[in-house]
Image (cartoon, rainbow, N blue to C red; front, side):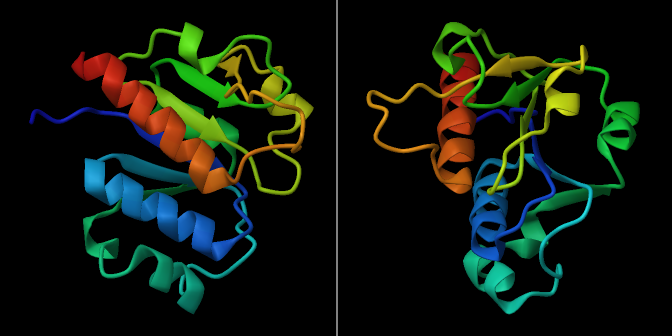
Length: 153
């Protein structure tokens, strides 16, 4: 299978197992993992390493001080994932080179980032209002595999 070039971007991730699971997803699909800002844990955290298992050597991890630093290295399209978006992920054409940007587990992306004209806000629709949001690693998995499905289709 030919490589797909997507960037998974986590802004201020807080929970080590989520980041570890996302790192493993990126390793499995040869995707770049960008971490923006401060993390709520150490990169050496045992829970982070455990969730990523022995795949960390295969993760293309890039750290950025802030979202502006990320955008200095990315000149393609960017999508901000938020429950506040009007447009569904499933109504957006995704292409090779896109960046999929997710906020921290507790509050999601802040209004400053969401108003940034360098990205388009997307939501992952839920069929009920029974929960506030999806788990971060689940949301990233849904978005990544929808992008792969579209690009490979």
